[in-house]
Length: 136
Image (cartoon, rainbow, N blue to C red; front, side):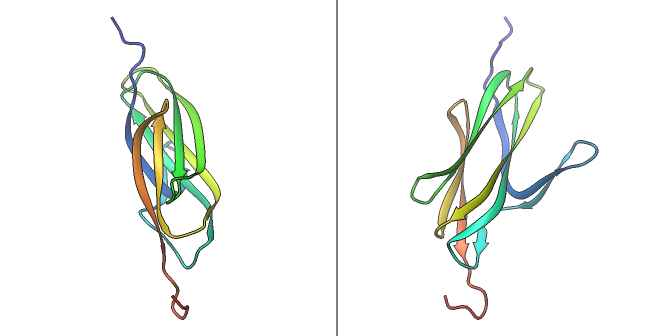
């Protein structure tokens, strides 16, 4: 019997400043973010992108990406459907969050779910680093 549904694996999830596509179809990730350093808070980020790569699944799925504040509130949420016809196929989804206000420094989180099942949660520290000449 051939399976008609296998939940996919999340091969990677990366937060970055931009994603571009080459003529070959390959993606270029620009400014992969480990920590967000800002001169003061509150501050608004014009845009952040989250690239997720799914593999080893069969079926149609819904990916949900959430940005969670230090207090646990959901600041942003995106959902998108994708399909994998067989386990050798790969799905790459890019999620863009625009005009995100960071009201305070602290540890924010990115959560990646497939069909409402958490696959990954990772920290995104927002660190206030005053510029030279500014009071701390």
